[in-house]
Length: 194
Ligand code: SF4
Image 1 (cartoon, helix red, strand yellow):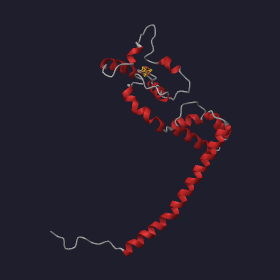
Image 2 (cartoon, rainbow, N blue to C red; image 1 turned 45 degrees about the horizontal axis):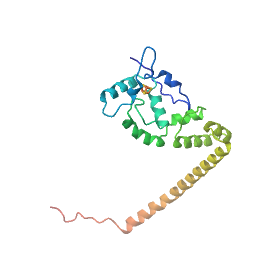
Image 3 (cartoon, rainbow, N blue to C red; image 1 turned 90 degrees about the horizontal axis):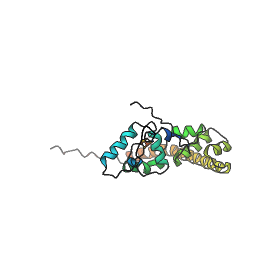
């Protein structure tokens, strides 16, 4: 069976993807919901549930929704609770620029802390007004202004650090050269032939 999988991030609060789920019961296709809550040793049930997920057109969206909602129970997106556990732990570190761009384009989707910071930075560099950032992130304009100030500070601090490093590099090289001249390397291979 061919399936066209949807991989576009879902909008926050959008549950319409569930209408296309392969595990959704219809009058012609009954699915036991308990199938997706097997015990770890119920190998056949796990295999059966995963086979349904494998042909599900919203598998990726289902997995994302489970991770973003902290839904750690049952089989979701073709993965058992145990298989999903490391992904739950890693979610905070996700930095998916496609999501960042989707939000900058006006879509309301789930972002991690790192992705929100990337949105603020991109909006700041594009000189979007704080009111626009507020609308994009669904926060107050005052909060958006604070985020812009923090970003400006971070960018300035980074520039100062880079400047310091650039100034220090030639001094380090000079120091290395002087040390080399006053302490020439000692050859330790003289008279040691076997
Ligand atoms: S991926 Fe699996 S659990 Fe998720 S909606 Fe599809 S069939 Fe159901």
